Amino acid sequence: MRMLQAFRARFLDVLASIYIYNEHRGYTSLDRVLEAVRARCPGEAGFIAAVERHRADERKHYVMFRRWFELRGHMPLKVDRTCGHIDHFIERVFDCSI
Image (cartoon, rainbow, N blue to C red; front, side, top):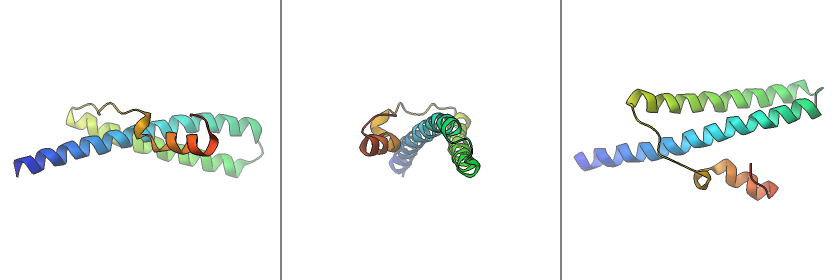
């Protein structure tokens, strides 16, 4: 039973670390997208609002996962772009990095 609890705790640390990385990467990247959309499409209020909502949602999830670690008194595991699904998506679709 103790081993199962240790496995569960490690699994949650890994999973939440990947999520916090991806959510942070998402909302910070959307900051740049939002800046570009506002500059290039100033008359597209609906589109700008949709990007703003999506960015806010990504940020909310990032804060939620960060808080989960803070309440436990732990730092997330160090995760890099190899675990970043948005990084892989952008590279495959646009042939460049975020």
